[in-house]
Length: 307
Image 1 (cartoon, rainbow, N blue to C red):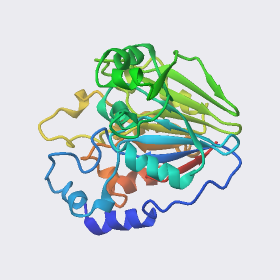
Image 2: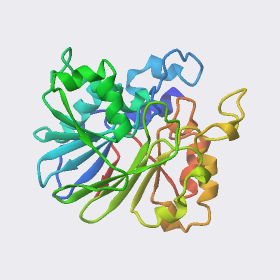
Image 3: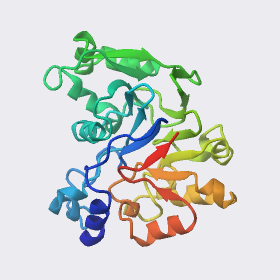
């Protein structure tokens, strides 16, 4: 990664000086785009990580979305990342007077739930923040410290989710669906988020598309936005590893899977959840230019998708 390019990207996003919500329709707001450990990653002092250590404005938080609903003055999080304090600040700049009405979790890997700790006694001391989770995820949080303390102290209030059951909030519907992934402590879900006009698909973590019971190309045809797992870009990204055996769909594999779709369908795709090694974190890398030239999008912090 080249520092001038990434610095230009950060400044182009306006840092965290985002404008307040100015629409009546709900929308999604991207708060983070990196894999669980963020960019730069702890313990990484390789060439691609060094710009992030040298310039804090180049840091990228773990993947998280906000759902902002001006009709109800409520806001929701998808994922509670280790960068939750900064991401809550970003969200407050976007919708300062809105109530945080819920947090939706996908699974029990650190970048997706560890930020719950900031709702706790030692930090925010929050009161009954609704946390929406699937059955195994609910059991994990209830029965294992320190997460169980959040429940005992009523910092969070666990709300049960079920596969393909829609949770309705005014003009927005949120539907979790099971996806195959490494499920050591919980199941893993993606989400369908349906607004009054448009629908988004959010799948930050999944195993290869071929092991999912659904055809991702056909699913994309039914939505307006598809925020998809882009943890690794392609072959050779992890030296010494056979990337074909890494349990994520490589960006190159996803592009090959969707190559038969027309431009309108490919434009629905937003790649997200990028590992610190992924060249798509550099907006001017050869790989990023290739992805955009093929008609796909790369999510960045402050990306806004109207629903």
